[in-house]
Image (cartoon, rainbow, N blue to C red):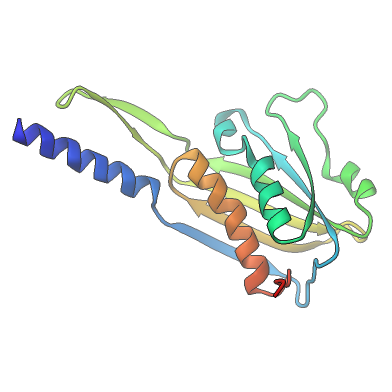
Length: 178
């Protein structure tokens, strides 16, 4: 009994650590980029294999946008959309603003049966979000980031949006209100 309890505690700790695993960010932007007072159009491309990693992103973008006084216009291309929104079409709508397009790839959450404990165990592999921001007036790339994270879907989504806003503030792309 004691051995089984210890095993369960070890498994629980492992799952917690897996859910809170690290996040890596690689980024680049044009010098002097400033999105203050502009509207940020966000286009998320969903893929069938990774739908869990893109659902509910709209509410995260809305929350962080309001908190940072940045107007967000959110659009999502569903995995099986018959007529997906193209970045080019949005460029015509978003004049004098910026368009941020995000795609997700990597490996999604997996589950397996552990015969020794009789439990279903979950694990999560690395997921990669690639976000590219365009100047809607010129169509040129002004900012890009690749965020790699391990963890469950909701945590990964939060890390994506939080990571983008942290980068905006750290690199003076978006000024903080004092």
